[in-house]
Amino acid sequence: MIRVIHLALLLLIATTAQSHNYILASDGDTVECVDRNKQLAFKNYLLRNHKIQETPSDYPIMKKVQKKSIWSTSEAQISTAKCEIGTVPIRQKEAISNHQRTPKTSTNSTFTPQHEYAEASVHAPPKLYGTRATINLWNPLVEDSAAELSISQIWLSSGDYDTHDLNTIEVGWQSDGYNITGGYNLEEPGFIQISNNIVLGGSITPISSFGGSQYEMTILVWKDRKSGNWWLSVGTNNTIIGYWPREIFTSLADHAVAVDWGGEIVNSQRFGRHTKTEMGSGHSPEEGFGKASYFRNIETVDCYNTFQSSQVIHPHAEITNYNISVFRTDDWGTSFFYGGSGSSHTHSGVAPLITLIRL
Image 1 (tube, rainbow, N blue to C red):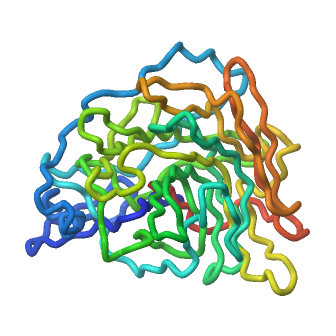
Image 2 (cartoon, one colour):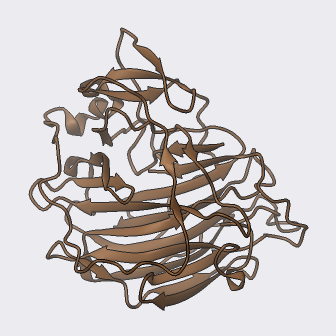
């Protein structure tokens, strides 16, 4: 099963309502339709005078229509629920664990102990005001579900971890051994959901299979030039989920100084053998389409609110277990394959784990 999760610098979507309106989502999960003004975001004192922005004031400008791909892919679908307008669907509370997650330590991708990466990045200048990319969806093996995870996501960041001024927005999918919802700082919520039917924490289906059908999701994060809020949409139709209000940010209040795309795993075996936890599809980039996971059509948003294809991105991988291979084509623009199998072992195929999209 694939799950959707929403994670950012300041985020936990939950309910403060006293009355309850429970319904079933499309994936069979029970959700509560909560007055959107009673989301946990509004417990943040920085948002005490915040007025909800109903829609973005503008969208980034696409420079040209993308050519049809030579590779066949399909779009995955996120679980939905039919909540009334003015409410948002919230999954019933689950056990929350953040013991594996820590923010990236700096915008130059200094690797955190136990966290291993295969990713590509761009850095300001010029200033960065958003990003869009299409991410291949898989269900990688996680060896130790209590201590490890595998993530494929986008990072937008500004500031510095050492000065406690690091702001990050993260979007992508995660595989671990259990359901979690939440963020780095559960006591300081900040994301405001607008959609009355997208279920954050709900399932997305289907996922890719080795040598078979490939499924993906397009994710867009951009700064609204009028309000200063950072908006989030998913899918080729730009389905709006919500936004991070400008009030919660310090270093990200104006622009991002770095955008990273790629995979991350937590290795709890670093003082002994290396973990078998997979990144991406669990296969190396050299195996290519249908076997290795990918990010495609990687773009950033410039100061003119226009998409710019990231002509030059800087790939880096910490160890040989996981790697990255950047390429460029007319139809996929700047893209890369990435991932790996961890320590040597026989690939087990799709593991019965939970895959999450971190939004």
